[in-house]
Length: 408
Image (cartoon, rainbow, N blue to C red; front, side):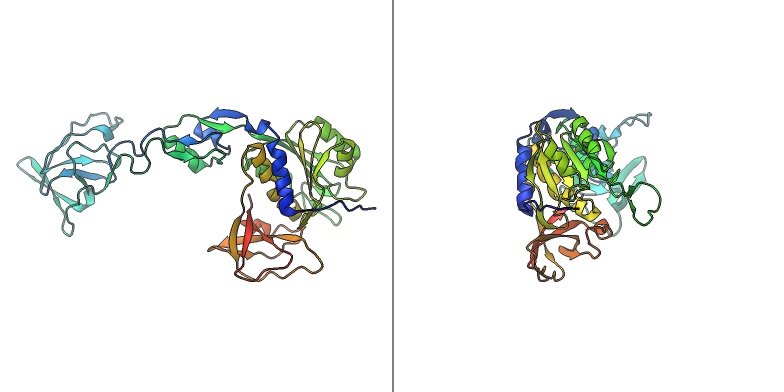
């Protein structure tokens, strides 16, 4: 089959081109308001500030006794209700020097309390109906302020909690919920739709010679969801111009993603379809391995097309490289910076090539360990990776600091 060789751009330039294209899209900045649990996986639409001091009242950090003065302490207790469902953390009785009162972890600090003494550090003595609290053998009285959680000791009211454009994880949603938020302004999800191509691809069973098992269907959509996208129902296309054109004409997602068909042979249909649609290329090829046939284009109505190579590692490295810059632009955010780390071993230079390499790596103890089995058709290395190491064609020596691209 005949090939042509489209001009290739540098890897970093391809990322910049997609980010710039994203900045021209406005739909990615639409705002919704959701409860914290429903906001998980979305991006904050505004800076979020604390509604209250954290903690918002003085409380005990331990089960035990709130005390004033020095031991022994006369035990005084509030009147506890018979109903065990009542919140007794709010029940207190004021104490004076020489007195103690029971308190639970998180319990409201009584007026007059100077410290908390832990229950396991105490001994109770009752004589004639009067109970005193003393320190158990081997323990000394607590210092003033011991085991007291002071109002605002973690955060004051009005403090910036989360910047605009932050991905809301489950732990961040828990933090915001704990801070009193019933609703959070979030960016509407960017809609994306995938088209999986290749007549040789099967979706069930063990492939025979001349077949390959699908590495994208169901997996790519889940990957998109981690980036705050709403994945619309995917399509599986035969290698025919009709299928590709129909997909473009009937897909209303903001981002369209092809796996396979992005190369330049006569059977690769993505470029032919884009030419018929009079799309404008953002890049046609990239100076990187794996994944040099990756492409990106803008359709006349503003939709963005990402063409990923058909080889699995090449496809996923392209997705990790180009989707985050595009989404950041669509959300009005800066181009995501790269991490860096020292590499744990030498990386030899490429011969007769100026292309950068994206190498699956495991970052451990602040060092990046390149993983084996990283040819463009392999996924075993990537399956264990935490990052992609961005290596220059000239190679690197162990200890060099190199850029890292997160995988997701």
